Amino acid sequence: MKVKERECKSIISKSGIYGVDYSINPYIGCQHGCKYCYASFMRRFTDHSEPWGKFVDVKINARSVLEKDLMKVKKGSILISSVTDPYQPLEEKYKLSRKILKRLANTKFPVTILTKSDLVLRDLDLLKKFNESRISVGFSINYLDDRDRKIWEPNSCTITERLDALKKISESEIECYLHVGPYFEGITNLEEITKNVGNQVSEIQIENINLSENQDQIIRIVRENYPNLEQTYEKIRMNDQPYKQRLEKEVEKVRKFSNAPIRLFLD
Image 1: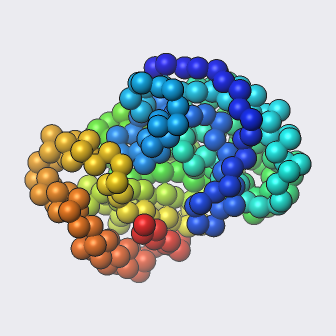
Image 2 (image 1 turned 180 degrees about the horizontal axis):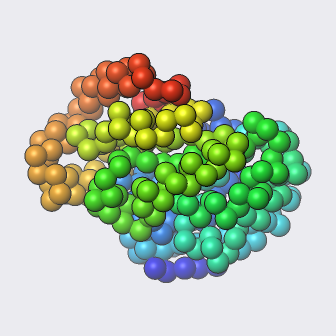
Image 3 (image 1 turned 90 degrees about the vertical axis):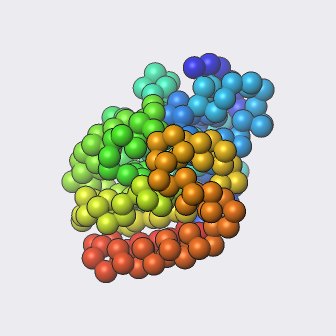
């Protein structure tokens, strides 16, 4: 893993994500190394030759730049993070996400966190300082079998650790949500995932797989680990509309017993 400490000119960016005004990414790159990560396109804007998942740039001046940015932008919702995980292992050393949260707790900006890591529990004290309904924590869970996690997200924490962290944060009366993205046909079991989170989340987000990035790698991993699904994914690569239609039907089935509203994102 190649780690570089860099200074950034700004830390709050306008977001193109539905329902979010801004995003904050304390890092460029991510140690989790998820094989399907759409954010791998960010590598093109760096000077790195290393593959995605093998480098991280640390925005060491993020906290001081945040102070300047807050004086420039209008009030709006902030997502931490959109193209990296704010609680990847390096966060334990640099504490950038913690410093950012500590400052945002003293503002009126609504904040959403999305992570695959139980390291977010370290900052439970800060999460409790946000006014009610101004903070939410989302966990990305695409499967319950840790074998699948090791295949697709080799350096992330276990599914059990995520579920335990979600439970603890929810029990602290902090709003939580579940993000299932991407939905892997034949691998992701929406019904079982939904049942596992029960009443602990206020919303379930489901996102289709995007083969515009990493399609060769995704197909190769399917071929090597799920050979019975190779043709399914080759067809999705050629035309993803039937896959999206099947996903819509699957979501409708899950809505009937889900305790939380479900939002489906189709690009």
